[in-house]
Length: 219
Length: 260
Image (cartoon, rainbow over the protein chains, first blue to last red):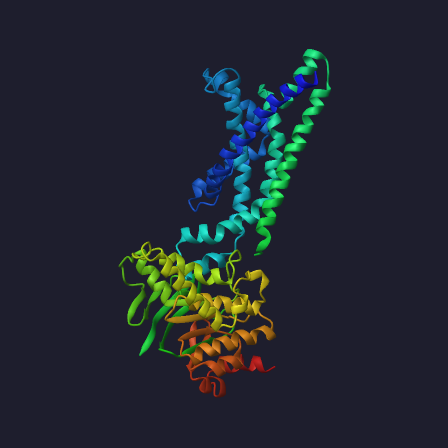
């Protein structure tokens, strides 16, 4: 029985990991684009981006998942996500990427705006271009600044992936719950917690290590 | 020969007029101090000279070449802009060292980036980089920090950081080196080590413009002193004229405030 549960949970957790990895791969760069949009000097763009961020951050991720998954099919009669498990997975990724990109964008914005103007000016009087100043001087300072809040978000994401359960994506909690229904046992559901704990533990160590690596300088 | 000529520089921020027409010139190898109370426009003037701000009107010439002219509509290329930029060095009040680089890399970074654009960079990369390092070490040596070459800015005192900032500016061989209140962020003990570096530069005939509140130092090191008040040059002359025999009432009041 234990082996059977473990292999089902492993399979579910693999889906969880896929969702986690693809969300980060999409949301980390998209967040930077949104951050630049929200700092734009072109007011209409800035207003549009900030309104979007407000809506995404102001509503539950679970609701966004449901809307993104059901809305196209029910309202337009056109389920753009495709049917079955694959469709649910793609819709989940879309919802998670949008949601997390907005949170990341605010973290980036804080990090970029927090670097003192003097750093840009020093670069300029030394004849460096804006791009050189950004990549050679500012970027690492931004990364150092945003690492703690980013690690917070990333660890939240590990657990938030379970929300995809609401549109019946078969991640680890879904796999655990299945035993409750079929065999009447509850410990597999509880046991899924171990997966989350171990994974977020690994991430905590990794972020701690990176922070330590960057502790050689202070602003 | 005048290495710097400044004609009728004006600058406003919104409705606030900060510079109301500044004219002066500076001879090669001379030291100019700009004094005046806060808000008189000293720093803004320095920022216009170093292209951190764009003046509203006026003309700036370095070595008889126009580096800024509000009348001219000629678009400068990036290369020309950079050349003009590099004629003026600037040392900031708040040092603005790059925290993630050690002393040597702070001094080398801009030189290395500039070298990448040289046509012979690929062919002579090794020699060019070696030469940059040798040059940088020599300059760090000259500000007395050869022992700190591998330290990061956060490991240095304020005075040491400011000396690194001076070395970083010097490394690009500016025609004129500007200082924006270089010791205002330092306590008196650390002030002296920075001032003595500036004095040693003066002794080597470096052309410099120093915005400062250190009156004794200004008197000692300058060839020429400008007193600014409310966006204009209120009085100027040799240190002896300005400090010993001030004519304008505002300057008398200003100097009097230091004697209390």
